[in-house]
Length: 169
Image (cartoon, rainbow, N blue to C red; front, side, top):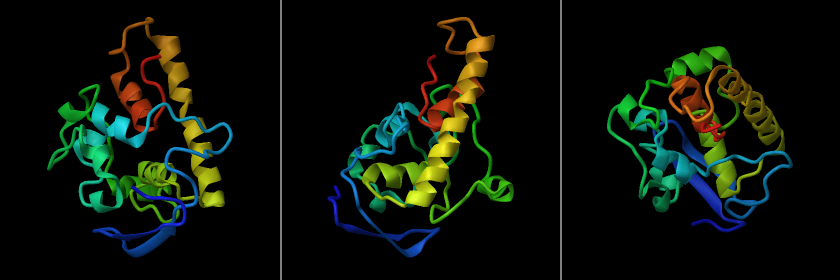
């Protein structure tokens, strides 16, 4: 969809005339140690954020990301891979200070833009650090679930998926 050097202009409900440059090829040139398990398209197809994510910002993202996406008009926990409620309102994230930089929807929006090729070194380092820290949930699943029981700790597994970690550990 985009190529290196393109300027993306965002106009949606949460941003007006936000612009960023594509500095890397889509899905390539990730920071060392940042190896997300799933692409944004795979995450959307598996079922994340109760099907209520990116609904008004599709113009910014590749159409093919939505070809198999499990999305809906209202939040629906059944659209999530693990079929459970898994999100807090954006106001909760803002109150916690987890919405940073030019990505008003949070980590997944940052990841989508990073995957497309936007590079903002300081913000990227912060978000990758947050991604690494989220891996602790995998340890809790390993410590408390029988191998192969993917429905043990479904909320933590859904959260891992929403941060592009492997929820099937």
